[in-house]
Length: 70
Image (tube, rainbow, N blue to C red):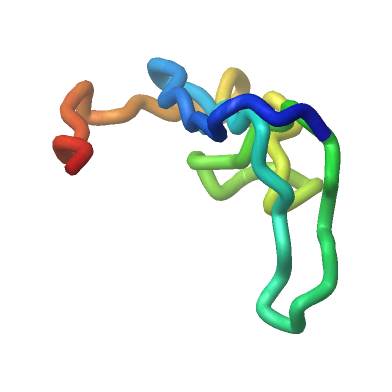
């Protein structure tokens, strides 16, 4: 894993693109240590918590508004 500052990008009508962060489950085990991965937002992925592109098929649309980052 790189030493870059972790970031999350909200992809319009799509996934959350995560860079530079290890995903750890509630049990404390590492789910993935890939440097970049996408998380599902539509709820239809067959590979949750990861995005499998299902948002394109199910017509997922976000509201276009996001909470400010503090």
